[in-house]
Length: 258
Image 1 (cartoon, rainbow, N blue to C red):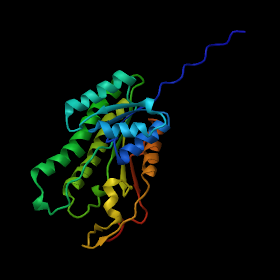
Image 2: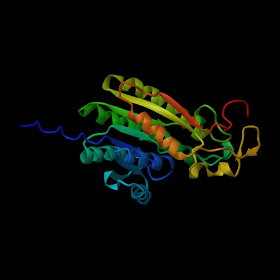
Image 3: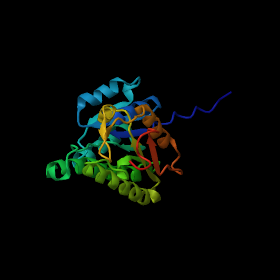
């Protein structure tokens, strides 16, 4: 008796993750690799991207592409190389970001301001722009973009204007991309994270300036919880979307008067 040939194995879903060499980006990249994705590790430093790949049980599904997201030509190359290697892009996690020194506003230099704006705002825009280009053209069409925002967008810390302004603007990118992608099966969402335990938040364990002038320690959450949340958002069918998610340490001083 002849049987029909088995259906070919579905192609791997492909995720591009910026800032994949450390912190939240690394945790998310490892979660996606463990979940069966092909993952493009993008970031400025080859060595840290390689360390991320080496920590995975599936390093063969990781593609390392050193990329400075502030350079629009570099971002275009990132997506072109991704398509050349994997054939498509199903998920973009827009994660790369930096902050400026916590100094009085008048002490910030134009260079420090521009560095944060270029990385936290222009970089995600370039990535969204190229993700749209690829997701509109591929077959099956569409994909998902997840932006890493911050609770700082609506509850700033003292002396954080560059970071707060760019994360507030990220919400605008998310809403505009959601609207512009609607007709092309491109879903865009944002996760606002409060106090994930990474190198960036390490000072919180020693004490950080509060809105009332006190210096106090703050609770953090395991970064792997963030990675699982991003993965859950990515796994939704494109007909559904978590538009905004806030994931935070329950006892951090966010809700209420500080």
